[in-house]
Figure 1: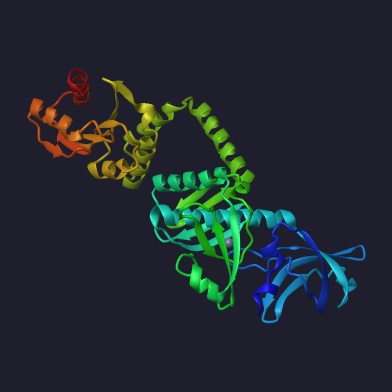
Figure 2 (figure 1 turned 90 degrees about the vertical axis):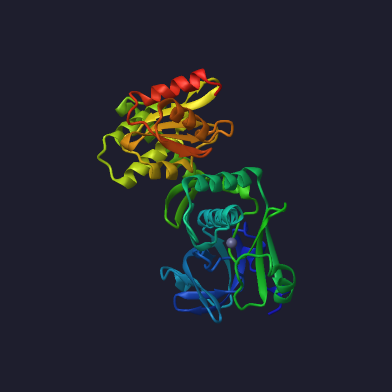
Length: 396
Ligand SMILES: [Zn+2]
Protein backbone atom coordinates (compact mmCIF):
# COMPACT_ATOMS: atom_id res chain seq x y z
CA UNK A 1 0.00 0.00 0.00
CA UNK A 2 1.27 3.46 -0.84
CA UNK A 3 1.29 5.52 2.36
CA UNK A 4 0.53 8.70 0.41
CA UNK A 5 -2.99 7.49 -0.28
CA UNK A 6 -3.56 5.85 3.08
CA UNK A 7 -4.59 8.51 5.49
CA UNK A 8 -8.01 7.92 7.00
CA UNK A 9 -9.93 11.07 7.88
CA UNK A 10 -9.85 10.07 11.55
CA UNK A 11 -6.03 10.42 11.36
CA UNK A 12 -5.62 13.42 9.08
CA UNK A 13 -8.60 15.42 10.35
CA UNK A 14 -9.91 14.06 13.66
CA UNK A 15 -12.16 17.11 14.14
CA UNK A 16 -14.03 16.59 10.87
CA UNK A 17 -17.57 15.52 11.78
CA UNK A 18 -19.02 14.65 8.37
CA UNK A 19 -18.07 13.81 4.82
CA UNK A 20 -19.73 12.95 1.51
CA UNK A 21 -18.87 9.35 0.59
CA UNK A 22 -19.85 6.77 -1.98
CA UNK A 23 -21.38 3.43 -1.05
CA UNK A 24 -19.17 0.75 -2.60
CA UNK A 25 -20.92 -2.38 -1.37
CA UNK A 26 -24.05 -3.35 0.52
CA UNK A 27 -24.39 -6.69 2.22
CA UNK A 28 -27.64 -7.07 4.19
CA UNK A 29 -27.20 -4.86 7.26
CA UNK A 30 -23.73 -3.64 6.49
CA UNK A 31 -22.22 -1.24 4.01
CA UNK A 32 -18.77 -0.33 2.80
CA UNK A 33 -17.97 3.27 1.91
CA UNK A 34 -15.01 4.91 0.16
CA UNK A 35 -14.11 7.37 2.96
CA UNK A 36 -12.71 6.52 6.39
CA UNK A 37 -14.48 8.98 8.65
CA UNK A 38 -15.42 6.47 11.34
CA UNK A 39 -12.71 5.10 13.63
CA UNK A 40 -13.16 1.31 13.47
CA UNK A 41 -12.08 0.68 17.08
CA UNK A 42 -8.92 -0.91 18.46
CA UNK A 43 -6.13 -0.22 20.94
CA UNK A 44 -8.56 -0.15 23.87
CA UNK A 45 -10.89 2.30 22.17
CA UNK A 46 -14.40 1.49 20.96
CA UNK A 47 -15.47 2.31 17.41
CA UNK A 48 -17.21 5.49 16.37
CA UNK A 49 -20.95 5.54 15.79
CA UNK A 50 -23.04 7.89 13.72
CA UNK A 51 -25.50 8.06 10.84
CA UNK A 52 -25.64 7.73 7.07
CA UNK A 53 -27.87 10.45 5.59
CA UNK A 54 -29.39 9.93 2.15
CA UNK A 55 -32.47 11.49 0.53
CA UNK A 56 -33.85 13.01 3.75
CA UNK A 57 -33.51 9.65 5.49
CA UNK A 58 -31.08 8.77 8.26
CA UNK A 59 -29.75 5.28 8.82
CA UNK A 60 -27.96 4.61 12.10
CA UNK A 61 -24.41 3.23 12.14
CA UNK A 62 -24.46 0.92 15.17
CA UNK A 63 -20.97 -0.59 14.92
CA UNK A 64 -18.01 -1.28 12.67
CA UNK A 65 -16.55 -4.64 11.62
CA UNK A 66 -12.89 -4.72 10.67
CA UNK A 67 -12.34 -7.44 8.08
CA UNK A 68 -9.70 -8.54 5.56
CA UNK A 69 -11.47 -6.63 2.82
CA UNK A 70 -11.85 -3.41 4.82
CA UNK A 71 -14.17 -1.81 7.34
CA UNK A 72 -17.88 -2.58 7.18
CA UNK A 73 -20.33 -0.15 8.78
CA UNK A 74 -23.00 -2.10 10.66
CA UNK A 75 -26.31 -0.38 10.09
CA UNK A 76 -29.66 -0.36 11.80
CA UNK A 77 -32.09 -2.49 9.76
CA UNK A 78 -34.75 0.21 10.25
CA UNK A 79 -34.89 2.34 7.11
CA UNK A 80 -31.74 0.98 5.52
CA UNK A 81 -33.54 -0.23 2.39
CA UNK A 82 -33.20 3.31 1.08
CA UNK A 83 -29.44 2.83 0.56
CA UNK A 84 -28.05 1.63 -2.79
CA UNK A 85 -24.63 0.72 -4.11
CA UNK A 86 -22.97 3.54 -6.05
CA UNK A 87 -24.88 6.45 -4.52
CA UNK A 88 -23.34 9.36 -2.65
CA UNK A 89 -24.35 9.72 0.99
CA UNK A 90 -23.45 11.99 3.88
CA UNK A 91 -21.62 10.26 6.75
CA UNK A 92 -22.08 11.98 10.12
CA UNK A 93 -20.22 11.18 13.33
CA UNK A 94 -21.79 10.91 16.77
CA UNK A 95 -19.50 13.79 17.68
CA UNK A 96 -20.04 13.86 21.47
CA UNK A 97 -18.98 10.24 21.71
CA UNK A 98 -16.01 10.72 19.37
CA UNK A 99 -14.76 13.85 21.13
CA UNK A 100 -14.95 12.31 24.59
CA UNK A 101 -12.97 9.32 23.26
CA UNK A 102 -10.39 11.69 21.78
CA UNK A 103 -9.98 13.28 25.20
CA UNK A 104 -9.90 10.11 27.28
CA UNK A 105 -7.54 8.39 24.83
CA UNK A 106 -5.14 11.36 24.89
CA UNK A 107 -5.35 11.40 28.71
CA UNK A 108 -4.26 7.79 28.77
CA UNK A 109 -1.20 8.59 26.62
CA UNK A 110 -0.35 11.35 29.06
CA UNK A 111 -0.78 9.25 32.22
CA UNK A 112 1.22 6.35 30.74
CA UNK A 113 3.96 8.77 29.74
CA UNK A 114 4.14 10.33 33.22
CA UNK A 115 4.15 6.88 34.89
CA UNK A 116 7.05 5.82 32.69
CA UNK A 117 9.03 9.02 33.14
CA UNK A 118 8.59 9.41 36.92
CA UNK A 119 8.65 5.79 38.08
CA UNK A 120 9.66 3.66 35.06
CA UNK A 121 6.24 1.99 35.21
CA UNK A 122 4.76 0.32 32.12
CA UNK A 123 1.11 0.44 31.15
CA UNK A 124 0.00 -3.16 30.56
CA UNK A 125 -3.63 -2.60 29.63
CA UNK A 126 -5.78 0.41 28.86
CA UNK A 127 -9.49 0.93 28.27
CA UNK A 128 -11.39 4.14 27.83
CA UNK A 129 -14.97 5.01 27.93
CA UNK A 130 -16.93 8.20 27.98
CA UNK A 131 -14.60 10.41 30.09
CA UNK A 132 -13.31 7.37 31.98
CA UNK A 133 -9.92 5.68 31.82
CA UNK A 134 -9.08 2.31 33.22
CA UNK A 135 -5.46 1.09 33.17
CA UNK A 136 -3.33 -1.72 34.53
CA UNK A 137 0.30 -1.02 35.30
CA UNK A 138 3.48 -3.01 35.97
CA UNK A 139 3.57 -2.34 39.74
CA UNK A 140 1.33 -0.80 42.38
CA UNK A 141 1.78 2.82 43.43
CA UNK A 142 1.75 4.48 46.83
CA UNK A 143 -0.73 7.27 47.49
CA UNK A 144 2.05 9.85 47.27
CA UNK A 145 3.17 8.47 43.92
CA UNK A 146 -0.37 8.58 42.55
CA UNK A 147 -0.68 12.20 43.65
CA UNK A 148 2.60 12.98 41.91
CA UNK A 149 1.39 11.33 38.69
CA UNK A 150 -1.83 13.37 38.82
CA UNK A 151 -0.02 16.62 39.57
CA UNK A 152 2.44 16.10 36.73
CA UNK A 153 -0.29 15.09 34.24
CA UNK A 154 -2.50 18.04 35.15
CA UNK A 155 0.49 20.35 34.81
CA UNK A 156 0.91 19.25 31.17
CA UNK A 157 -2.81 19.83 30.62
CA UNK A 158 -2.74 23.36 32.03
CA UNK A 159 0.42 24.17 30.07
CA UNK A 160 -1.38 22.98 26.94
CA UNK A 161 1.09 20.56 25.36
CA UNK A 162 0.48 19.84 21.67
CA UNK A 163 -0.43 16.37 20.39
CA UNK A 164 1.29 15.70 17.08
CA UNK A 165 0.44 12.95 14.60
CA UNK A 166 3.31 11.48 12.54
CA UNK A 167 2.73 9.03 9.69
CA UNK A 168 5.75 7.24 8.17
CA UNK A 169 6.57 4.09 6.21
CA UNK A 170 8.19 1.14 7.90
CA UNK A 171 11.71 2.01 6.74
CA UNK A 172 11.54 5.50 8.16
CA UNK A 173 10.03 4.13 11.36
CA UNK A 174 12.93 1.72 11.80
CA UNK A 175 15.48 4.41 11.00
CA UNK A 176 14.15 7.26 13.11
CA UNK A 177 11.62 6.09 15.67
CA UNK A 178 11.86 2.41 16.61
CA UNK A 179 14.35 2.94 19.41
CA UNK A 180 12.59 5.88 21.01
CA UNK A 181 8.86 5.12 20.63
CA UNK A 182 6.69 3.26 23.13
CA UNK A 183 4.47 0.44 21.91
CA UNK A 184 5.07 -1.84 18.98
CA UNK A 185 3.66 -1.88 15.50
CA UNK A 186 1.55 -4.53 13.89
CA UNK A 187 2.60 -5.97 10.55
CA UNK A 188 1.78 -2.96 8.49
CA UNK A 189 3.98 -0.93 6.22
CA UNK A 190 2.59 2.34 7.50
CA UNK A 191 3.30 3.46 11.04
CA UNK A 192 1.37 6.13 12.88
CA UNK A 193 3.05 7.77 15.88
CA UNK A 194 1.63 10.15 18.43
CA UNK A 195 3.92 12.70 20.03
CA UNK A 196 2.98 14.58 23.21
CA UNK A 197 4.65 17.97 23.57
CA UNK A 198 7.79 19.20 21.91
CA UNK A 199 10.22 19.88 24.75
CA UNK A 200 12.83 17.56 26.13
CA UNK A 201 11.51 14.18 27.26
CA UNK A 202 8.39 14.30 25.07
CA UNK A 203 6.40 11.12 24.62
CA UNK A 204 6.29 9.13 21.40
CA UNK A 205 3.94 6.17 20.99
CA UNK A 206 2.83 4.01 18.08
CA UNK A 207 -0.93 4.44 17.94
CA UNK A 208 -3.69 4.31 15.35
CA UNK A 209 -6.37 5.92 17.51
CA UNK A 210 -7.98 9.33 17.65
CA UNK A 211 -6.63 12.15 19.82
CA UNK A 212 -7.13 15.82 20.60
CA UNK A 213 -4.81 18.44 19.07
CA UNK A 214 -3.88 19.93 22.42
CA UNK A 215 -3.84 18.44 25.92
CA UNK A 216 -5.56 21.56 27.31
CA UNK A 217 -8.83 20.23 25.86
CA UNK A 218 -8.84 17.51 28.55
CA UNK A 219 -9.32 20.19 31.27
CA UNK A 220 -8.13 17.88 34.03
CA UNK A 221 -7.56 14.30 35.20
CA UNK A 222 -9.07 13.13 38.50
CA UNK A 223 -8.58 9.93 40.47
CA UNK A 224 -11.58 7.63 40.73
CA UNK A 225 -10.12 4.56 42.47
CA UNK A 226 -6.95 2.52 42.69
CA UNK A 227 -6.28 -1.01 43.86
CA UNK A 228 -3.02 -2.90 43.39
CA UNK A 229 -2.06 -2.44 39.74
CA UNK A 230 -5.43 -1.13 38.60
CA UNK A 231 -6.05 2.63 38.31
CA UNK A 232 -9.23 4.42 37.28
CA UNK A 233 -9.58 8.07 36.36
CA UNK A 234 -12.21 10.56 35.30
CA UNK A 235 -11.48 13.51 33.07
CA UNK A 236 -12.94 16.82 31.99
CA UNK A 237 -16.33 18.04 33.30
CA UNK A 238 -17.26 14.57 34.52
CA UNK A 239 -14.19 14.55 36.78
CA UNK A 240 -14.71 18.12 37.98
CA UNK A 241 -18.36 17.40 38.85
CA UNK A 242 -17.44 14.29 40.79
CA UNK A 243 -14.75 16.02 42.82
CA UNK A 244 -17.17 18.79 43.79
CA UNK A 245 -19.89 16.29 44.69
CA UNK A 246 -17.48 14.40 46.93
CA UNK A 247 -16.50 17.64 48.65
CA UNK A 248 -20.21 18.34 49.34
CA UNK A 249 -20.46 14.85 50.81
CA UNK A 250 -17.46 15.61 53.01
CA UNK A 251 -18.98 18.91 54.18
CA UNK A 252 -22.15 17.02 55.11
CA UNK A 253 -20.11 14.46 57.00
CA UNK A 254 -18.43 17.29 58.87
CA UNK A 255 -21.86 18.71 59.76
CA UNK A 256 -23.23 15.36 60.94
CA UNK A 257 -20.18 14.68 63.08
CA UNK A 258 -19.90 18.33 64.15
CA UNK A 259 -16.21 18.13 63.34
CA UNK A 260 -14.56 20.08 60.64
CA UNK A 261 -11.12 20.46 59.13
CA UNK A 262 -8.42 19.31 61.51
CA UNK A 263 -11.02 17.86 63.88
CA UNK A 264 -11.67 15.10 61.36
CA UNK A 265 -8.12 13.98 62.06
CA UNK A 266 -8.99 13.89 65.75
CA UNK A 267 -11.90 11.65 64.84
CA UNK A 268 -9.51 9.31 63.05
CA UNK A 269 -7.19 9.26 66.07
CA UNK A 270 -10.09 8.37 68.39
CA UNK A 271 -11.18 5.63 66.01
CA UNK A 272 -7.68 4.24 65.93
CA UNK A 273 -7.37 4.33 69.72
CA UNK A 274 -10.60 2.37 70.22
CA UNK A 275 -8.45 -0.66 69.46
CA UNK A 276 -11.13 -2.58 67.60
CA UNK A 277 -9.52 -2.42 64.21
CA UNK A 278 -7.39 -4.90 62.30
CA UNK A 279 -3.68 -4.31 61.84
CA UNK A 280 -4.28 -3.33 58.22
CA UNK A 281 -7.06 -0.96 59.24
CA UNK A 282 -4.75 0.65 61.80
CA UNK A 283 -2.14 1.27 59.14
CA UNK A 284 -4.74 2.78 56.84
CA UNK A 285 -6.00 5.14 59.56
CA UNK A 286 -2.44 6.07 60.47
CA UNK A 287 -1.70 6.95 56.84
CA UNK A 288 -4.81 9.15 56.74
CA UNK A 289 -3.70 10.92 59.93
CA UNK A 290 -0.19 11.38 58.53
CA UNK A 291 -1.60 12.75 55.26
CA UNK A 292 -3.12 15.63 57.26
CA UNK A 293 -0.24 15.95 59.70
CA UNK A 294 -0.01 19.73 59.28
CA UNK A 295 -3.42 20.14 60.96
CA UNK A 296 -2.01 18.64 64.24
CA UNK A 297 1.21 20.59 64.20
CA UNK A 298 2.32 23.09 66.85
CA UNK A 299 5.33 25.39 66.81
CA UNK A 300 8.08 25.06 69.38
CA UNK A 301 11.09 27.35 68.92
CA UNK A 302 10.04 27.89 65.31
CA UNK A 303 9.92 24.17 64.51
CA UNK A 304 6.81 22.25 63.50
CA UNK A 305 6.20 19.50 66.05
CA UNK A 306 3.35 16.98 66.29
CA UNK A 307 2.55 14.98 69.43
CA UNK A 308 0.43 11.86 69.06
CA UNK A 309 -0.71 9.38 71.66
CA UNK A 310 -1.39 6.16 69.70
CA UNK A 311 -1.26 3.12 72.02
CA UNK A 312 -2.37 0.74 69.23
CA UNK A 313 0.45 1.62 66.89
CA UNK A 314 3.72 -0.27 66.58
CA UNK A 315 7.06 0.42 64.94
CA UNK A 316 6.23 -1.41 61.73
CA UNK A 317 3.08 0.60 61.06
CA UNK A 318 4.86 3.87 61.86
CA UNK A 319 7.76 3.16 59.54
CA UNK A 320 5.42 2.16 56.74
CA UNK A 321 3.17 5.21 57.09
CA UNK A 322 6.12 7.57 57.62
CA UNK A 323 7.23 7.13 54.01
CA UNK A 324 4.38 9.31 52.86
CA UNK A 325 4.85 12.13 55.38
CA UNK A 326 5.14 15.71 54.27
CA UNK A 327 8.57 17.34 54.69
CA UNK A 328 9.43 19.71 57.55
CA UNK A 329 7.99 18.03 60.67
CA UNK A 330 9.09 16.26 63.83
CA UNK A 331 6.46 13.74 64.91
CA UNK A 332 6.59 12.36 68.45
CA UNK A 333 4.44 9.27 68.93
CA UNK A 334 3.74 7.41 72.14
CA UNK A 335 2.97 3.97 70.72
CA UNK A 336 2.27 0.40 71.78
CA UNK A 337 4.02 -0.99 74.89
CA UNK A 338 5.06 2.52 75.99
CA UNK A 339 7.61 2.97 73.24
CA UNK A 340 8.24 6.58 72.32
CA UNK A 341 9.06 7.23 68.67
CA UNK A 342 10.61 10.23 66.96
CA UNK A 343 10.08 10.64 63.23
CA UNK A 344 11.78 13.58 61.57
CA UNK A 345 11.08 14.86 58.06
CA UNK A 346 12.90 18.07 58.90
CA UNK A 347 16.54 18.15 57.74
CA UNK A 348 17.47 20.38 60.68
CA UNK A 349 16.01 18.11 63.36
CA UNK A 350 17.66 14.78 64.06
CA UNK A 351 15.34 12.20 65.60
CA UNK A 352 18.39 10.44 67.04
CA UNK A 353 19.75 13.52 68.81
CA UNK A 354 16.47 14.26 70.56
CA UNK A 355 16.06 10.59 71.39
CA UNK A 356 19.56 10.57 72.89
CA UNK A 357 18.65 13.46 75.20
CA UNK A 358 15.65 11.50 76.51
CA UNK A 359 17.84 8.40 76.99
CA UNK A 360 20.41 10.47 78.86
CA UNK A 361 17.80 12.13 81.06
CA UNK A 362 15.92 8.94 81.96
CA UNK A 363 18.43 6.12 81.63
CA UNK A 364 15.99 4.29 79.34
CA UNK A 365 16.98 2.08 76.45
CA UNK A 366 16.69 3.05 72.81
CA UNK A 367 18.36 4.04 69.57
CA UNK A 368 17.85 5.06 65.96
CA UNK A 369 18.96 7.35 63.20
CA UNK A 370 18.41 10.87 61.88
CA UNK A 371 14.94 10.13 60.53
CA UNK A 372 13.57 7.55 62.98
CA UNK A 373 14.43 6.78 66.61
CA UNK A 374 12.75 5.10 69.57
CA UNK A 375 13.09 4.80 73.33
CA UNK A 376 11.32 2.69 75.93
CA UNK A 377 9.51 5.01 78.35
CA UNK A 378 7.74 2.50 80.59
CA UNK A 379 9.06 4.15 83.74
CA UNK A 380 8.27 7.72 82.77
CA UNK A 381 5.06 9.31 83.94
CA UNK A 382 4.22 11.66 81.11
CA UNK A 383 6.69 11.09 78.26
CA UNK A 384 5.07 13.47 75.77
CA UNK A 385 5.19 16.29 78.35
CA UNK A 386 8.85 15.52 79.00
CA UNK A 387 9.66 15.77 75.29
CA UNK A 388 7.78 19.05 75.09
CA UNK A 389 9.92 20.44 77.91
CA UNK A 390 13.14 19.23 76.31
CA UNK A 391 12.22 20.80 72.98
CA UNK A 392 11.15 24.06 74.58
CA UNK A 393 14.23 24.46 76.80
CA UNK A 394 16.93 23.14 74.52
CA UNK A 395 18.25 24.71 71.35
CA UNK A 396 15.93 22.67 69.20
ZN1 LIG B 1 -3.41 6.81 20.97
